[in-house]
Length: 260
Ligand code: ADP
Ligand code: MG
Image (cartoon, rainbow, N blue to C red; front, side, top):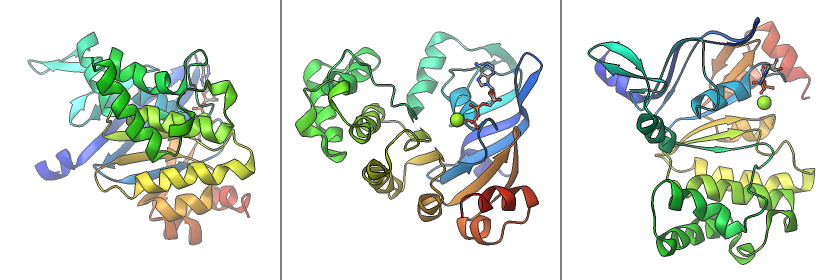
């Protein structure tokens, strides 16, 4: 593989195995995402999609394999050609590359919208109160939530909470955004407002997006590539028009037919 191909990959899983006890969730997984690429992962419940994202956020560890993010090893640092456990400083640096938006929003319930968005930039990036607030207002405006800045999460609809969740992730200026079924917990009439924000982000050339969703029409619209994931493996991947109109694998066909 050429040098330019290597550096083009912002996320790379090589031979990654993750298990809980005897239960193998990811089985010698190889997977990569190019810088700026918009990739959607689809697949049945329990197949390991969230695990892929949680591993990237270092919320879970792995039993075997190597993961590189922006060309640097996620879990280990290389010293004199040897893999060493990562230092806290290294993990902090790696986490800054990525922001994650969760299915259940995961906002801090005791903090206002403004504080939810300013907290990490202040604590992790060391921004002043004023700078963090200015930055928060920029992203709250982008998701249409400026007027709700002083409310608490419990005073918002699910769609509004999720839009705050997206603003919170953006406020850390990540290069990679991970979305884990961002609209699955929403009432149907609230799905559109969240998809609209994600669609806007997907139009940004530089941002890398890795999205897990069951919104097939949306996936088709925004993705450069769609990956069908089942039982800890990628069964099939391709351009959206390939996967959605002429899937090659029987398992992909069966899965997609359940959405018709
Ligand atoms: P998906 O997001 O595709 O629905 P997950 O990544 O959440 O799937 O889960 C994959 C598998 O790992 C499931 O069988 C699930 O039960 C199992 N699993 C996830 N988290 C844990 C955990 N903390 N302990 C044990 N098993 C887990
Ligand atoms: Mg999941």
